[in-house]
Image (cartoon, rainbow over all chains, first blue to last red; front, side, top):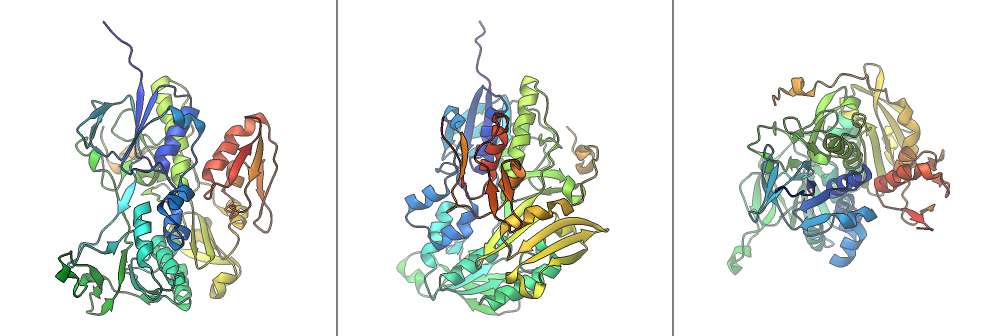
Length: 426
Length: 64
């Protein structure tokens, strides 16, 4: 007796990447079951405001959630949402994932959209009172501490660290930003512009500590006496300097949530490796989207990388969903993923916006404005070997950047040799 | 159906102009200009534009 069982795609991760993937599965014609499993209790929500306007003015918890909740297509009514549920293991050969409760879900197709979590510093000192910004609760909790006059120590100066520093300053806090090994937004904007942005942030009132890293968290005095856990109350740097703080925020990068994929022979050194169609290398009928997907970026000369830009999750969802549905139903596969990476940040009322892979540049040219007055508007071309690899605008209406997209050198089409390059055998 | 952009939300990110350039354009000042009507075949691109709007300011209105 054989009973036809409905085919099912399981999406692991219910943030924006998981939502958009589910929507795109339906758009690609998938009419089987879709189950989306997400660790947070909330429906998918938008994270960029968490370190910016929502951190500044969250309102009530309900208001905050309402303001960031992502709009869902009507097709999402047909999805089985499993929120507040974590996937802890998987068997990619047997096509099952295991939930924290022990329940197993079998799948015909799998979307890996489990994203990232904040990296934590492993240094001595209290572990309580060290804030991160990743979830709605993180932002609400941090906001309550950002009272006027509070001394805030922000550790890490990527986009999130800089945004939190700027927001805290605008709320009247005294802000100390500990850079670590490289300057503000260095990884994305490069050395020259990072130096400019450091000066700019200092001019706006941020105390920036350059060239030193955190060696220990200081302990708040008196807190232990009431029986509660010791709270972090500032940092001690490697050179011995102590910076007292009422609030400590860690913004030192991210860790991909790949633990549940262990034991399947995948390369999980930095996220999940995917091919040009965003199919997980070494697993059948599985694709990955968003921050966790390590792919060959044709806009970065074929560099294998994870791109943690908001827009990437949406762009990838479209390609990945079509790839998966193509494998499962035999429709035509989509074109390989080739979206232009793009990103933005808001700090002190100034928009920083970019496209391409500016981190690969060996030289920059200012096309408009001046680096000495970025708030008046500047357009920066990032160059390598004579071609434009990225464009960044600062202090201009975001919409101006569209007009500079045509400057980007079109990537040479290269055969998909992902498996060779990363040494994965399947 | 017609496109409607909530100007109170719109921050002129310009992502819509990449997804659906026939409907959304950024003028030389970087400000969004758009047309409300669109051919039925363009719906997919309009929906993409709605998805990539960082502030979710784009809406479809009418005869649904």
